[in-house]
Amino acid sequence: MKVWFEHREKLAPDIWQYFFRPERPVDFTPGQYTSFHIAQPLADPRGQSRVFTLTSLPSDRLVSFVAKIPSPCTPYKQALHNLNTGDELRLDDAMGDLVLPKSADIPLVYVAGGIGMASFASMLKQLLATREERAIFLFYAMHSRSEQIFRELADSYPLALKTIAITPNHLTAQEIKDSTPPDALIYLSGSERFVEELRSGLERLGTPHEQIIFDYFDGYTEL
Ligand SMILES: Cc1cc2nc3c(=O)[nH]c(=O)nc-3n(C[C@H](O)[C@H](O)[C@H](O)COP(=O)(O)OP(=O)(O)OC[C@H]3O[C@@H](n4cnc5c(N)ncnc54)[C@H](O)[C@@H]3O)c2cc1C
Image (cartoon, rainbow, N blue to C red; front, side, top):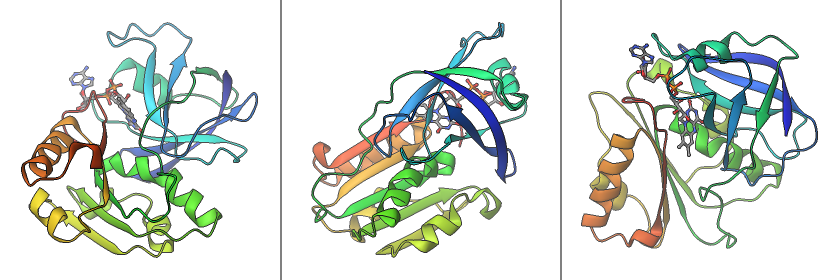
């Protein structure tokens, strides 16, 4: 599907949200991701496409995602950041398992490392829009408070718990396990290292692997 760039919005230093107008409503479930293809030749060893998690709602007029624009960054990120209003990109079908379970009774644990928080934005927006209250325990790790994104969104949802860990404090699997219900579904999103460390830690503490859903934002060493 074709999408046209509309505008971008700075959320934090080096962190931006990009908005696009789709040719027709995008069919996805909140929490899913899709690939954004830039047509102009980029000379980028990683190619013309990157995967981003959608932060909008399926019913929104514009489709959006959040990306970090590090320095230095790849030709893809440079091109993304230099898009002009009306520039055309191509979008693939959305996919991914970081979505809400059908049963509203299952407690949910959202664990975000850096911009991994973007994985939970659309789900939280959906729950707010439908006025659905679920037991959500949020753990959010970052290097500095200035990196915090979707603060208002998280504050507007009646979370069961909100824990923010700022370096040098680190989130541990033990802390997550100790402060959440044993039957909770645990979502992990962040860099590969962040996700893998917590995933293996939680499994070592006896969390069944089917209770852990994860996605890592590849390409970044740190988030
Ligand atoms: C399921 C899934 C969901 C995802 N969702 C998101 C999302 O919502 N948002 C998001 O941002 N990403 C997301 N990603 C990751 C995304 O697809 C990209 O892989 C990621 O943004 C890195 O982009 P990039 O390769 O353009 O590298 P960059 O972001 O440009 O750079 C990555 C690292 O490489 C360094 N680097 C880049 N170029 C150079 C250079 N020339 N010399 C030295 N160092 C350099 C940078 O400084 C940085 O440390 C997701 C990935 C998956 C698999």
